[in-house]
Image (cartoon, rainbow, N blue to C red; front, side, top):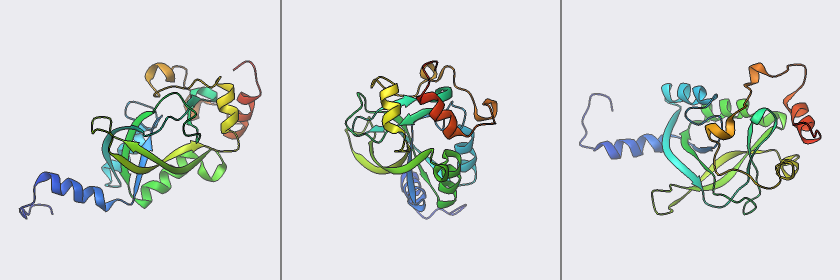
Length: 188
C-alpha cells in the first residue's frame, strides 16, 4: 500500500486498516487519552497493533465505579447503572490483546474481558460488538454496594482525582489484597 495509488480513497484504506485487527476493545478508564495507562495504547498504535476508532459509549447503562486508589471498574451488571458509560473504542491485534490482558490482570482475577455492545454517540446509535475489561465477578457486586449504587457516566479527570499509579502503591500486597481491604474497610 505504501507509495502506490491503487485508486482507493482514504476512507477505504482506513476501513481496510481497521479490518486487519481481530478485536475491538472499549476502554473507559486509565487506558483512555490523557490518563496514566494510555502510553500503552500509544505504543500499540505506534507498532501498528492498535487503531483508535473514536469516542463511544455503552449501548446499555452500566455501573462505573472506583475502587482502591481511584482505580476504575466497569461492572458487568447491564441495566443496573444510571449511565451509558463514555469511553474510547480501539481495534487491536492479538499481540495487543495479550499486552492489555496482562496490564488488566485477567490471569490474576482483577478484570475479566467480556463482550459489550457500544455505540458512537454521534452516529445515531449504530451499535458495535466489542469487549471491555470488567471488574472480576468475584467482587463486582461488592464494589457496586460499596459505591452506594451510584456510579459515574465517565472516568473523568475529576473522578480520577486521587488516583495512585501502580508503581506508587504499597508493593507488599497484591492488587486483590488492596481490593479486599477497600471493600471491607470503612476508612476508604
